[in-house]
Length: 252
Ligand code: HEM
Image 1 (tube, rainbow, N blue to C red):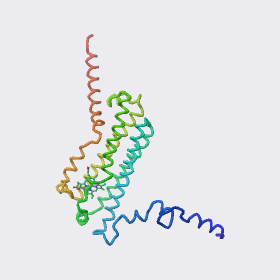
Image 2 (tube, protein in one colour; image 1 turned 90 degrees about the vertical axis):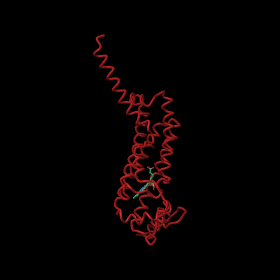
Image 3 (cartoon, rainbow, N blue to C red; image 1 turned 135 degrees about the horizontal axis):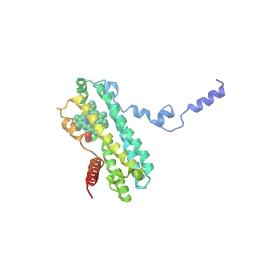
Image 4 (tube, rainbow, N blue to C red; image 1 turned 135 degrees about the vertical axis):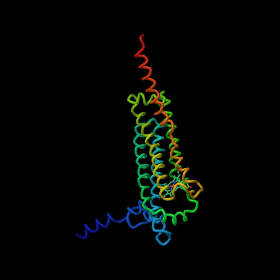
């Protein structure tokens, strides 16, 4: 390397951003702070604490992104930007998918050894997860924004499904919201199975909630209208078919 090319190389590799870290990569991503957020080895009561903290902390990050995208998607709907809202909701759904699949890493912990970690969690409980709370909050916000869109189009949800091809974007939105709600449901289901493997189903959690209560929460839907509508569609279709067959046998 000539001295001038070395100088150019050095210049390109020298950090220009403010902050801590030897490179701009470390400064921009604040890796010093990020990687100091997990207990150092000497403070861990068990080796698996790093795994446990990594899964939880990264879940909070994905949930933060998911909630931020849904909030933005609700704002887009309020400005009648349905296509923009669809684009953001797709991302948010993917975030929930990641949160759900990465949780499987926790099954790598031994249920006996996990007990050592459990005792250092204090009263820490997933009910206080800022990410999950935010997800619940923004879900209601986007539902209201979607409902207003339906109102303005003069449509009931069942009608939107019956005439989906005429209202393509609204139909896509309804389906994405269904997928969003389904992802929350699937997360709960997966979480319950993981908790059952780590603690059993007869145990009481760190804030006094029996694990069985988590099982019951699986039946809860954040956006129940979307699911009720499906049952209504079956009823409507069957009623129409019955009416047609009665009409068909009618001698008149
Ligand atoms: C071995 C792993 C895990 C165990 C044993 C566990 C255990 C529990 C228990 C017992 C509860 C009931 C509340 C309580 O008394 O604490 C709960 C709730 C909860 N946990 Fe976990 N959890 C685990 C992993 C996770 C992960 C990775 C997350 C990701 C953010 C999470 C988020 C939550 C949430 C959001 C709730 C409230 C549940 C709901 O509203 O449906 N948990 N967990």
